[in-house]
Image (cartoon, rainbow, N blue to C red; front, side, top):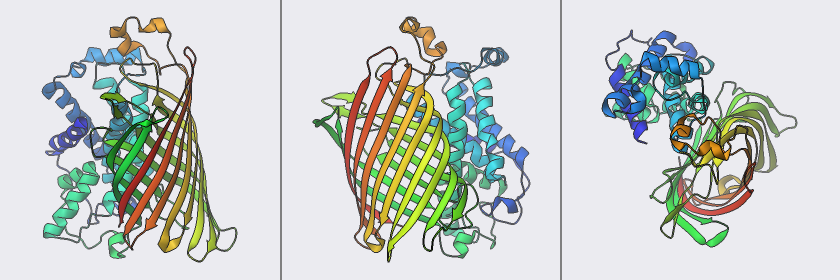
Length: 486
C-alpha cells in the first residue's frame, strides 16, 4: 500500500503547478457529453503522474530500476515484453490501481468511457518501456489497462454521488474531501481547475432528485477459515465487507457502460490475513432489456469482470496460504432473469461466461519471486438470489475459474536464479488449474437499516502440472457479521 500513497502524493505535487483554462460552468460530475473535452490536457496530466512516480522511485527511494537512460529505453524496445516475477499484490492490485488514476484523469477532463479507455493502456506502455531499466512486462500491460478501466470507472461514478457544486463552506469541503478519497485523480484535477470551490446550481441529478442509484451495505464481523482440509488447522479474524450495487440492471434505458455494476470488497482488520482479502466487480458494458412476460424481466449483455482473492493464515507460528486467484482482465456474455414468485418476492438469476485474457492462481512449486502462475482461460459464474422483500435475501453463488499456464519452464532454467529472476520469461509452472468458489449467503433484515449477514464459503483448487504431481486442496470459511444499509 506504500506505493498507492506515493501515487496520490506525487500526483498532487507534479500537477500542482500546471494551470489550465477553467472548465465550463457545468459541474465536473455531470454527464461527460456536457463537459468540454480536453484530451491533450488529460494526456499531459497522465504524463505528469508517471513522471512523478518515477521521480520518487529515482531520487527518494533511490531504486536501481529507476536509473533510466536512453540506453535502457533502447534496450527495452529491442528486448521486448516478458512475464515478470513481482508479488501478487503488486501485479494484480497495485498496477490496476495505478491504471485507474490514468483513466480517472481522462474522465475528469470530459472524456467518455470509451474515449478514456486508451489512457491506462498508453500510460502503462510508456511506463514499461521508459520508466524502468527492467524488461517491460506483458502482465503489467494487461492488469494496468483492463483493471485500471474497471476500478477507474467505479471510483469516478461513486465520487459523482458525493460531489455537489451547490454547497459552500464546511459541507462543500466535506464533499470535496470525500470525493477525493474515492477518486484521488479526479479530486486533484478539480483542485487544479478550480472546480473544487466553484459554486454552481447545475449539479448532479442524483442530488436534485434526492435519490441515489445505489444499494450499499457495510458489514463488520468475523471470518473463521479452515486450512488443508482439516477443522483443526484454522484461523479467524475480524473483517469489514462493503457490498454495493450501482443502478438497476433490469431497468430499461440503462444504456451506458457501468450504468450497472456490483462491487464487493472484503478488508481484513488484523495482520493474520492480507489487508485486502477480496475485490469482486461485475459491470455491464452493453445490454439489451427484454420483458418476455408481464413481470418477467431479462437482460442479455456484455460484461467486464475484475476478481481478486488473497488469503494467508498463521498456523502454529508459520504462515500458510490457503488460496489466491484473480482475473483482472476478463470480458464476456451474461444473462439476467428476474422471475416474480409472490408479492414482494422474486428470484433473480445471473449467469456469466467470460474469457480470461489474464488470470493468476496460487502454485505449489514456482517460487522465483512469486508464488502464483499466470495464464489465460475462462470463467463461469452463476448467482441465484431469492429476495423476500422486507425480510431479507438468500443467495447461492458458484464461480468457476479455469486458467491455463501456456508458457512454462524446465527445471534447469532455475539454476541461475540471479539472472532467471528477470529474464526467465515464463508464466510459471506449465499446466492448468480449476478453481471453484461455492458460496451460500443469508441477509436477514433486523430493521430497516440493520442486517444480519451470514455466509458459508468453500474454495476448491485442482491444479494439473506438466512436470509435477497434481495437487487438490480444499478450504472452507464461515462469516458472521452485522451490517448497516445506506
